[in-house]
Image (cartoon, rainbow, N blue to C red; front, top):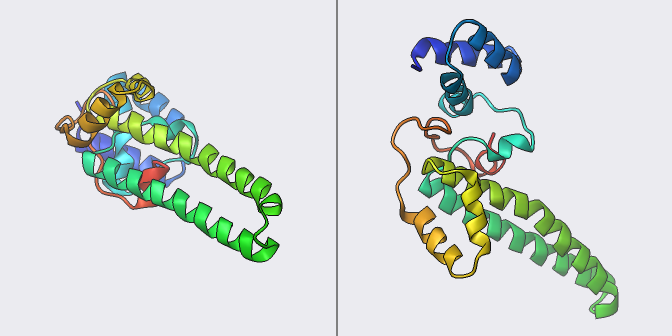
Length: 183
């Protein structure tokens, strides 16, 4: 059972810079249940404001509420459009308006933008599935035409699990960047 003592301990250890794996090992050595340890490690950063370690694996951990999912998805899309628009504008002004000179560069910017956006978008879908207490593998349904529309509506309107679930505790509101990179 998660309690204030466990949250305080994890917060203090993270503030000292101790890695989550070391905290997990210490708590399990003290007799805490692995599922309680997993829940508190997944959600304590949102409660205390202590940042998670920035890594690719952390992108897919934890939960994301309906509102955070919606806003972050919209802001990510607008960010991509802004990057493409500004880079196109800068390139056309600096290289001229000929397609031969700007085309390959814009194609590279386009590919780079989406190479960054796709993992971030998938992480949003996975964390939203976690909020519903579903496996992150449900994100694969977004690849199936027509089924993806049903899941998009479910993810936008279905309320997440109240209280802790298998994937952690509910996240509190965070900034766009911290929500996007799950920090």
